[in-house]
Amino acid sequence: MLLGLLLFCAVAWVDCKAGHKPSSDGTTCVPSTDQCEGPLTTAGCATCTGTGSAQTCLTCSSSKKVRPDKKGCIASCPPSVTTENGEFCECKNGYKPSSDGTTCVPSTDQCEGPLTTAGCATCTGTGSAQTCLTCSSSKKVRPDKKGCIASCPPSVTTENSGVCECTPGNKPSSDGTTCVSETACNTPNCKACDNPKTDNEVCTECNDNNYLTPTNQCIPDCTAISGYYGDTDKKCKACSPECAECVGPASNQCSACPAGKALTYGGSDPAQGGTCGDACTADKNGCKVCGARIGGTDYCSQCSVGAQAPLNGVCTANARVQFCTQIADGSCTVCRDGYFLKDGGCYKPDQQPGKQVCTQANGGKCQTCTNGLAADNGDCSKSVCHSTCATCSAPSIASSCKTCATGYYKENGSDTTAGLCKKCSEKISGCKQCVSSSGSSVICLESEAGTGGSVNKSGLSTGAIAGISVAVIVIVGGLVGFLCWWFLCRGKA
Image (cartoon, rainbow, N blue to C red; front, side, top):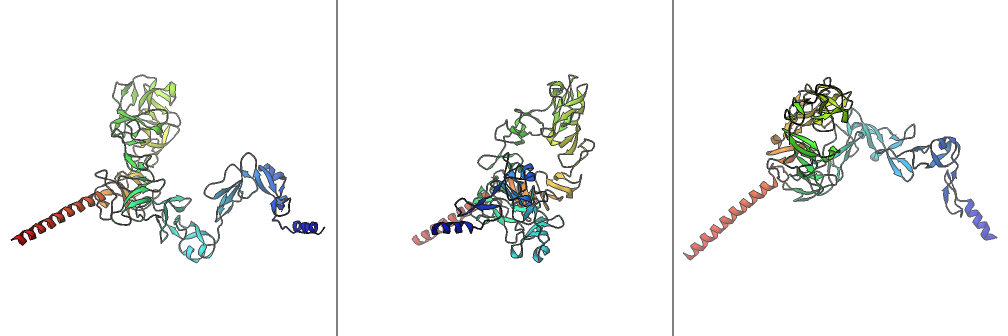
């Protein structure tokens, strides 16, 4: 009798949170899975807890996820602002459910003195734990989240919704304005190196998602070096001599050809590359006139057969592909949507050779040129950047470069801001291709020799340093030998 009374008291005194009830044995609490009421049922909830306006979703039907405000379901958790916790999409620190409950928005606490002074517009947390969420004046949140900077440092950071985040293997620097390696190596994004933190440091292995360049630097994409591809061993390697650019080592894996050669894709997927062959020749392969010129290579502009027209520079029967809506005497005058018209032919902006000219086509005309400028009524020949720019914000102005031509580096700013491009060899002697790194530093990606080691502060490659060292050893050894001979001879005398 007494034991039963004690058990009753134990169950009665279990204090459960809202939406939970005592378990069957009374020792803990379990979700009180009430039947979902009208609004939450309509929103896709399968099981719920609570009642009335306090009722929230526990699980969803059709493999969906409980949205951040727990008042309905969504197909998947919004990236960058939520974390997926079982069935639930939960807001990350510093975020709260949006007004419609489907995503998360910054929980904008008022910035305190130091972060306000550092340029922060909205913040989260309090005291020394407070961090920056957004910046004023279009600036970016710096890597340590304690202030703002003009742009995210290239190579060691990525920009995520206005926030500079360190790439894998890097951490915020002591002043918080850039990122530095978490390893003992000074080389950005380097995982292992010889002679760490010296002028003779040579990176031997890069962090994840980076490739080792011929100059022992680390970059996320080997196509930043013209004529190189990223191999499976995480090293940047030279393309076949047949290719200008490639996706692999073989001659049938070219993605772009040298001037005077034309690319023929090997299959239906252009990403697999193709082979570089002869350029257009009049009265061959069904072409009457080779009047289109792209990247130093001639392509067909008029076909011998009147019902055909050039597609990507090669004569093609329009009835088979239907790329041209108006053909006149072997040339196209109006291209189908998704193609653009150039010199009597239709070109795809995502395939060679069209991608050398245009990146966006609409209504049969090019809208945006490859250099980033707007086409002039479909014509990119009048929209030309300065010779030092690869892309730009204004034609023919040196200070308008967004990205640089091969052999040049951005002096200031990021790819989203305009600036000047300077020659690599002016910064680092013998450097053919380079890229801006954090601060004012420049990373050499390819040297004149094509194989040199990492470039150090002196501008000498490690190979050059090694050669000088050997020469010094030989000279010193010879001098010691001569002195030994001299004293031995004098001793005998």
